[in-house]
Structure formats: C-alpha cells, structure tokens
Length: 432
Ligand code: NAD
Image (cartoon, rainbow, N blue to C red; front, side, top):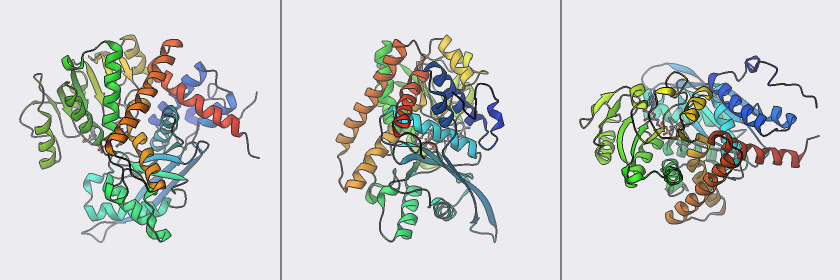
C-alpha cells in the first residue's frame, strides 16, 4: 500500500501549516491509537490533517480610539464524512491554526465516541476577550461570523461556545447569520439562550456530564464519593458547573482556581459563597475563605479527584509524577501530554480522558440542534436522562475496550471513536 504521507517515517513538524504543540499532541495521540488498532494506512493518513481550514484576518474597531486592530480568526473542519461538522468557537490571545485544528480533530473522535452524527470542527479568534468592552465583543463576533459564513450552516457546520465565548456570543452569531438569509435560523449555533431556541440544560451540560462520569468511574474504582475530595482547575463554564455538581454529589471541594489565583482549604470550600464571589468580582482572587496557592501547586494537592477544566498542556512530564490524585477527570481539552499520560498510567491514576469527560457539552448541543430542526422542545428532565444514558453508554464501551484490549482509557476512547469514522470513510469510498 502506498501513500504520500508516512507519518511514522517523516517528521510531522514538516507540515508547518498546522504546526503547534497542541496539534502535535493530537496527531501523536491519534497515531498511537492508529498503530494499536492497525488502522488502514490510507485512512490514517487522511485523518491526520483537517479536511478544511479557513484562516481569516479582519478589522476590529475599538470603542474609544480611532484605532482599528487587525485580528486573526480560524474555522477548521476536520472530517466531513459523518454529517455536518460541530465544534465550539474559542476567543483567546494564544489561539492559532494548529490549536484550532487539534481541537477540531478531538471533536471528531468525541462525536464518534458518543455516536453523534457529526464530524469535528472548531473555530477561534486570537484575542483576549476579557480586554474587550461588550460592544467591541459584539462587533468582533459579527465580523468574524461574516468572515466564516460561507463554510458554516445548519446542515454544514454548527458552532457552539468554548473558552472565552458564551451564550451571548452565540446569540450574536445566530443574529448575524439570520440577517444574511432574511429569517431566523436558530439551528445555526448551539449553546444560545433558551429564548432564542437554546436547549434547557446546555449551559451546565459539560460539567454535568463530567460529574456523571466521575460517579461512574468512582463506582468502577470502589471509591465512595461522599468520603472523597476534589480539586478543580478553572472556574468558567466547565469548572464552576463541575464544582457545583460534585458538591451536590457529596464530594468535598478542597481546591479551585482560575486565571487570577488558586484557592485551598483542606476543610472544604463553600461552593455557594465561591459562586457569589465570582458573581460580584468576576475572578477568584480576594476570596476570604481559603489560602491562596499557585495553579501549579493546586495540581499537586493530595485529593481523590483532580479535574483540570481550564487550559491545555497543564499536566506534563514536568509535574505528572507530583500529582497526588486517584482519578484524573479531564473537563478541558488536551490538558495532559502523551509523556504525562504514561507517568499517570504507571502511577495507576484512573483517567477519564477529555474526549469522553467533556462530551456532555456536544451531546446536549446535539439535542439543541435536533430540537431546533424539529421546532420541538424537550423538558430538562428528558435532556438530563438522555445525557446520562449517552454518557454512561460511552463510559461502559470505553472501559470494556480498555479491559478487553489492555489499553489505557484514553487510547480505548480514541479507538472507539476512530473505528467508527474509519468504517464510515471506507463505506462512503473515494470521490471520484
Ligand atoms: P471559560 O472561558 O468559561 O472558562 C475558562 C476558565 O479557565 C476561567 O475560569 C479562567 O479564569 C480559567 N483560566 C484561564 N487561564 C488559566 C490559567 N492559565 N490557569 C488557570 N485557569 C485559567 O471556558 P470553558 O468553556 O469553561 O472551557 C474550559 C475548557 O473546557 C477548555 O479547554 C474548553 O475547550 C473545554 N470545553 C468546554 C466546553 C463548553 O461547553 N464550554 C465543552 C467541552 C470542552
């Protein structure tokens, strides 16, 4: 069998268009799984790069100055085989094509693992949204939407929130798209406000889904959640909801963090007062009921459950051996490097990998899209029941494969996803 790209023979650094530490991590994880599952070489090479990558630059006018900034934006669609593509939009000052492409690739495996009819996509704008006024954020969002409008659509590619974006940003995307076509198109995005066709339960779905899995994993490990402690990095959408639902399950939260600081209280943090503090101040710094620690100290706290829910590349070969948890439940995308993975496997830490751990978000996004396309709404109870069923089903399939084939949980989850995509690719065949 011949192919133009031989990933094991050539340096993947050669493909400079997408090159970034995160894209290399996504490729390395994929290649590891592909080798173990003896994936057809042609399919493997085809899946190693995104099918479509759009890079745009556009002007963003500031409020108070006659200043116009040139901003870079991206939308990447990794696999178009499975149905429309699906994935969030990230606003962060470090966003680049490689990062967005890695996130798009992970979305493909995640959707396939959850058996959702989507391929993976992701978008991003390289800007710090915390430095923008509301009107600047709105102008930026509307212009970015226009720039990517040709490749998105309710049957093509459906954006959602990710880091730095929220339901208000989704509302502006929906409005901008709808203005172009002349009628309201709620199904163009998910994670929008309920009054615009958003789904009940979507805002908290990623955290809720992660906690459903933590309960399953604890059960599997014989861990009593009511006697367990947890540390959660990140206090945004995923982190704050994870903390909420963990506390509701009886877990003692002993450490939390955001970009401003880490907080530690071995006797347990008061979750409601943390949420109130965030409501008032926007950041955790200044909270009185705990001692301040750094984000790196936070990751090394002794606890039963560690949930990274902020950024990628947090657990590396430098700190993995210092982790002091029994379970690593990944809410963030790409928080753990391949080298760190091996160290944690050797330490017998049970890993709920990101493509499984944070899949509650895209699962309820799927529910939102289905409700919008059918003009029909489901109750919160119905949504949470269906979410629970899908999350537990994917967890059980992953554990089963991991035990049967003696694989770590990440590789098992990746193979579950990859095999579905590979099967679909082979069945559809090549054009022309
Ligand atoms: P968010 O913007 O709502 O919150 C991000 C949080 O991370 C904030 O509390 C911020 O202060 C904190 N943070 C930023 N930089 C940090 C740093 N250097 N150290 C520690 N904390 C830092 O974002 P989110 O939507 O909660 O997304 C978090 C992660 O979860 C991302 O990796 C994202 O891709 C992933 N994710 C999100 C969703 C979703 O539905 N929102 C779904 C799946 C995966």
